[in-house]
Image (cartoon, rainbow, N blue to C red; front, side):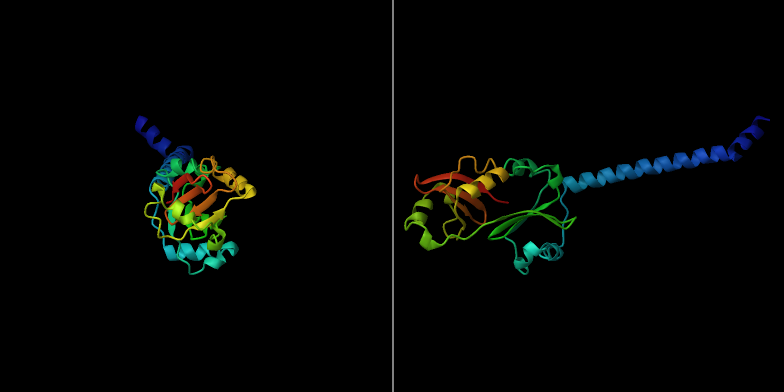
Length: 209
C-alpha cells in the first residue's frame, strides 16, 4: 500500500511541477554564478582586443574623424590594478570607468568606452610655438632631473591661463593643485610636465601610461 502511495505521489502534477521549479532554480543560480565570475574576470583581467576594430570604431565618432589612420602613442585599459592610481589623478573617476580605455595621441587624450562605443571624455593639447618661448626656455627646463630621457622629444602644450587651469583642476585636482596661471603645461610621450619658468621650477611631473 505504501509503495502504491509513493508511485501515486510521483505521478501527481503538483509534484512534477515542484521538480521542474527546483531544476529551474538550480539553473538560475548557476547562471548568476557564471555571470558574476565572468564580470569578475572581466574586471581583474583586461581582455585582448582587435586594435584595428578598436581604432575604426573610435575614429568613426565625429570628434575623432581627424585621427583616422593615426596610430595612438599609447592605449591603457582602466582596471583594478591601475584604478587607484588613476583615481588620484582624475576627478570623478569611479568604478563605472573600469574596462574603459585611455587613448593617448600627440595632441589629445581620450577616454573611450569600447563596449558601448562611447567617447566619455577628451583633453586636447596644442603644440607651443618656439617663437613664443623665451630663448633659454628649453635650456633651463632640460637641466632638471625630471627631464632625463625627454630632452630630444618635442613636447605638446603651452602656457596655462586661468580659465584652462580652472578646468584642468576640476578634472585632475591632484595633478594641478600647485600649478598657477602662467606656468607651462608640457606633455611628452611618457610624462606630463608642469613648469614654472620664472622660478625655474618643475611644479609637477606625472608619468603617463
